[in-house]
Amino acid sequence: MRNCQGLIDSLGSYVQDCVAAERPDDKSVENCVCVLHNLSFQLESENPALFSRITALAGTTSRANAPTETGPIGCFSPQSSKVQEQESHFDYPVLEQQYPTGAGWLFHSKTMQSYLSLLGSSQREDTLEACCGALQNLTANQGIVSSVMSQSIVQKLNGLPHISPLLQSSNSSLQKTAVALVGNLAKNQRLQSIMARQTLPELVGIVSSWTKEGTESDDTLAMVCQTSHSLLMKEPELGKRLLSNNLVNSLNDLSKNNRLFPKASKAAGVLLYSLWSEKDIQSFLKKQGMNKGSFVNDITSVAHRSVQVIE
Image (cartoon, helix red, strand yellow):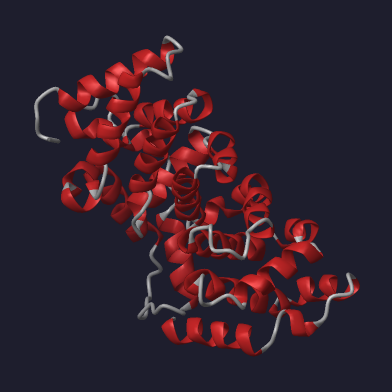
């Protein structure tokens, strides 16, 4: 379908026109963004040539920043995080075509702006989920392309104010898609500080309000804990304001509920263990009257060790 002449151009143009005309709830808009959502799935892996500008510039910049004497860079090498950070720092507007055609529209900033505008204006949950899902698809991979897409969404298009409210959606499918999108965006280290400020309150709110009956999605809660982990470690001062007894108790309850939440219980255990391992946060927790046993115990230690083995 991506190769059907004029299809993507027409769909994208129609959605942009409806957004401009303030018709976000038209059924036709929903249909169009659902098709665009599907067409964006695995776009980078199936059509890598579409992203040649980004990947070529990434290679050029990496070579320019490379030291004259280099050794092997491993997963835990001091250079590896620096290289990753260098590769993720690009000015996205320079990289995109001004007048794209066909599948080039699927990741163009004008299309992403349409998605974000709909997230902030549409009342149709299927439209919201399709827009979130399309953005999730564009940011799903490891590497420079998803990193640049993430920076465009957060920094160029200021998308977080449209995305973060969906984290509290009562529609479990929409919430799961929004959580997955935020998780993708948070993998970009350059975005973690701004993301912590704009999404952490909603993320910890999900954890604090989960129920023990198993009505929530295990995948959703696991992604929430994992993303909260990254953002809390990045912005511990902000984290301190959110680390209430209620949150810690909820994480503890979740960590013990392996039967209903196998993925989330592990992620909650890892988060608890890490909070106590961070000395500054540990000092704060002690002042709040919390004790080590709530964070480091048999359950959280097993979860922590399992992650170390994987890494």
